[in-house]
Image (cartoon, rainbow, N blue to C red):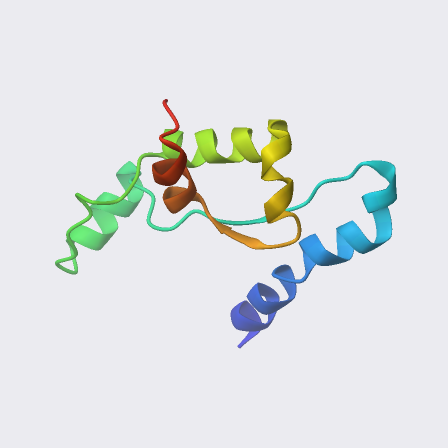
Length: 95
């Protein structure tokens, strides 16, 4: 229950930050990384039969976050949930 409550509260942070500090130039996004292919995830989930071959490497998530933080075109996502893997794919972000 605590995890779900914290997760729900976390999704309100970007909007709250914008409302309180947007006039100071603060930009905020909620980034959903999706399944990330790390050694730990691969090892743990393989025990349960999950195929993580389609998960994204951490560099894909990093490329999406860098784009959000540095590109003015990202302002259309301000305060919203952003699926990092979809964004990276849609923008053809290179690693």
